[in-house]
Length: 320
Ligand SMILES: Cc1cc2nc3c(=O)[nH]c(=O)nc-3n(C[C@H](O)[C@H](O)[C@H](O)COP(=O)(O)O)c2cc1C
Image (cartoon, rainbow, N blue to C red; front, side, top):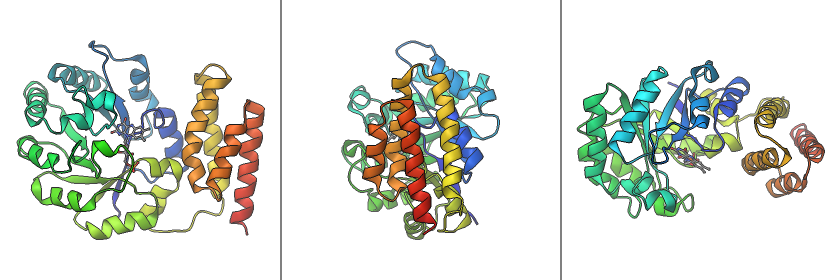
């Protein structure tokens, strides 16, 4: 059976514009997690989150909203908000590694606090009928921290626990810890999804072979770097389509136009596309040269020329 593939959210990248264009041009993803909602001390949902989750902006694909908080009242407030939009599930982020987040006891900084996790889950389950799923790292300081949370998590009817197989302290550096992840599988009754460094069909197969009991996998950065990856995994192929760069080009132009219309002025769109190219460049034939060319393009005209040149080079290489 084909694995279920989920898009792991990247704040600043995988908003509804990206998700819709991705789904239209590449496919292969069953469900998209939206980047987290975070409240700023008030029970108010920022406009950008509202736009991102609006059903009319997500009409062609399945998404699951996500929240990052350590406060039971905030959690419940976001539950009610997403339910008002018609969502049945809320994903809870206990994975974010950034010190500003973890020092205030959120994201991966909360994994070592099972009692606080319990407070949130208790209120959510007592005062709403939302389906809760989790997205976690294995700890902040140590990968064993998660093992102490499982007895609490096992008391609730969570849909699943997606685990990014790193600890918070690592940020995004260093290897995933598959031995520690393996220990999680038998330590909880919940269904686990695997997340971390699925960047190629071969990398996916290695994870699938090591953990044959898993059938749900989340792909984050790898999906931006290589948007063909999910469909190639699904179809169990390693060959790109012949019109790989034509499809990519149309996708690129679609998101460019949408971000250009949304962001005002040349600098924000430049920064936005540079962010994407940090990932896109990885699957071009010369990542450094590609990214350098994008960085050097200081106005929209030069940017268009740089992209055309990159695509010309890649087409020539693909066609031999
Ligand atoms: C720039 C950036 C933003 C991210 N934003 C989120 C987020 O909003 N919610 C979340 O659960 N994870 C977020 N992540 C983590 C990814 O979803 C994913 O768990 C992580 O990158 C590991 O998976 P990967 O190796 O497939 O990328 C973010 C990661 C990066 C690099």
